[in-house]
Image (cartoon, rainbow, N blue to C red; front, side, top):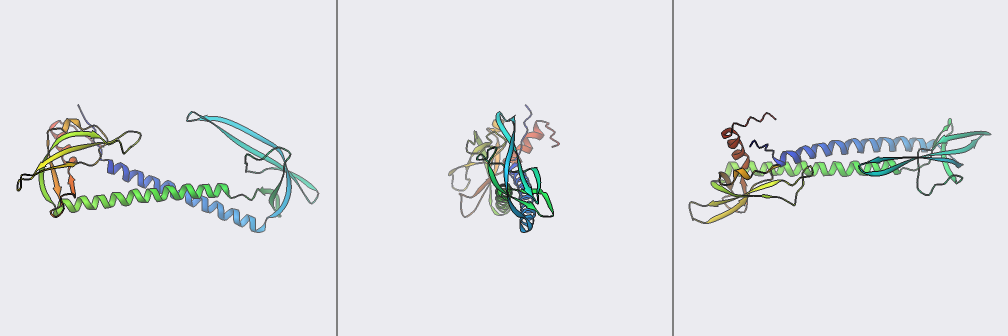
Length: 245
């Protein structure tokens, strides 16, 4: 059986970068539109308008029904009547309602509700995605530095994979990753130590019974790194698995 191994940390790093990019795009777009809106409002003139019609368009997405609304308003400027799409809707709006709108005195057909709800939503979503992405990236960098330090200065021991368990506390692309459990018999004191590997995105049960390298902090046995990925590479070579991903 050819197993496709993938380090969950690399997946989290990819997600961190992806979230950061998406968040930055939403954040920049929200701020840019907010600036344009504020510039418009600096020169806009307020007037009263009547909602003449509300057009609804329903569609299905992800098994749910969504509805978009287009609101048209009518208002009079210097004796001329304008009917324009407002570009804003809330559930309290009804045809025939009187509402305050804002228009450009140099172009009265350019009208706005004055609401910045859409801009705030973009900024909020962008901020959340960007912060989450940065957190994932920082966690991965710190985790990588910890592994590197343990491999350079830690005590190099040999353990045995005793079991492979699903990590139900984590979900990646809708699936739970797996962790290898291993035991190490310290050759100096004969004590048994139990450790677990990092997350892997596929079931690695075929590695049970194999030896694995474990790096342990010389001053704190609770700090360790199970080099499951070195073992994976050896397994691929033994099974003639050529993975060019």
